[in-house]
Picture 1 (cartoon, rainbow, N blue to C red):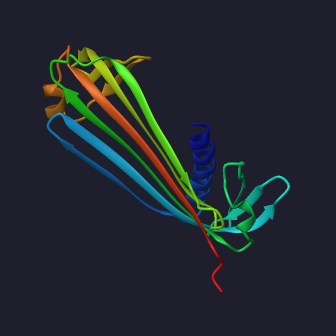
Picture 2 (cartoon, rainbow, N blue to C red):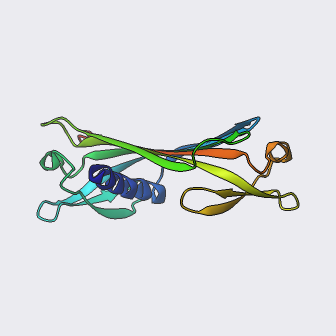
Length: 194
């Protein structure tokens, strides 16, 4: 799990750097009876402008000239292969799906699965990190006026507004909602273009 946090932290910093610079991305949303989902993808290419090998600080610059300093932790393999001028490609995806479970009956719980894969020895630094959290929560109250649903999960109670009246009509106290949140990050360093 520590590896996921280290790489995800490094990757998230890169994604943030990309969001302050020119980036591409898309948001997708969809629904079906009793189901809804949304996903967001961000892509950015940054240039390494400085490397401090002693502190493992890497300065990254976006297309608009904004810079960010990121510390590459010990889990970033092949650090010594990076050079000023190399490009860092970042892709970040996150998604949330909700599914209504009529009548309930499932155990209220939270599960998490995570994984990470780094570059092979001798290759330029690269890696993929991901995690998925699934929560089963009970529907304990409905507010028709606000079109809100109160869900009690294993750790907290939350109120969600259901903007689609047809979806709201399907929900009853005693039902359950399964929410799945997924994050994935991919980073690859490429040699500077000549």
